[in-house]
Image: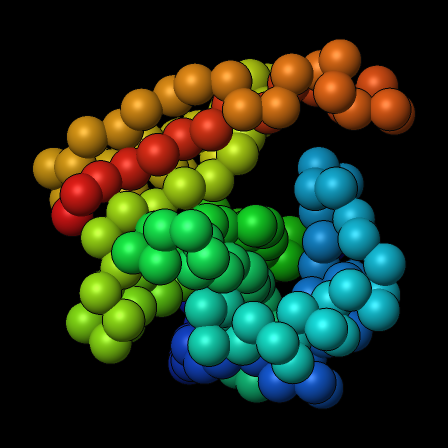
Length: 166
């Protein structure tokens, strides 16, 4: 699929129920994310819209970031998934979505830390979150969270990346 050279308009907003199917398709088409059921993405768009963002590129769903505030640490935003449609990769869209979401939640809800889990072989996600931390001059800790043996399906170890305070 060809990449778009430049978009005339990129908008960021919280997802709604109509976006649930687009989130699922982007996750599936990424070929790297763990894909949840389509039902889960509908629930995500309904119940976690305030802590998630979808980017539309010329009115076409181009990417998303899903997250939630940790109940035991409400100043921490846990990022569940980041996806960018193949046609819109290489334009910094993932970083722009992440920055906008975190800035909004820092201002509105006092979020001062960000967490995510990444497998050791996911160089794109490691680069994204390392760049995010570096741009904010925020410390970043990397520790194993879920060891491979904990997964019943042959999943690789998930490393916890904790960034902040910022």
